[in-house]
Length: 256
Image (tube, rainbow, N blue to C red):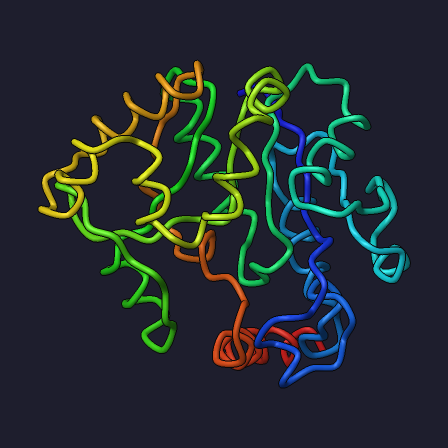
């Protein structure tokens, strides 16, 4: 299987609910035991069989926590800008796996499984879906935003694999999609009236969504159902931080 490059998006300031429980200036720098949150994500990518180059785009405060071989890029003013700043440091030959820095439970097995599933299907943009059952079975205490399709109830992941051409030519829609990524209803509104009706009546299928998204983007979009909730277990509120600290504590104890 061809290797892919990775971009870790670590430029979000800690201005949301997490600032109530941690004073770190940046979300990426929030400590989980004795490591910054971003370090867990970078380590998972380094352990992956299929990652060629990793670029981390974030504030200078996290640069010292990054291991050798990882490229650091100073973050800009928006998520979209950060993606393009990171793309400038890639050769744009390989597909690119974009990962947010706030999924510290992610591990190489989950990443490799997702990339292997993507390699089996023709497409330009791949996005993981995690079933409600899989998520609640693995992390019963986590609270996620779910949406219902014909195939079941899902939450979205925090990674996305895309060809460099699809990324470079989709800037016009990226700002909207990224800003609404936690709000399935707002994203469905972009698809048109009939899709809204089908979504509301739970009759919208993955295939229909893929086809419509592909026609809007001009690139083939593919949904991947992953068995690994870790790809979507993001830390954006105090209860999430409590959960990941609890889950990761035994690992830290064993290493010590």
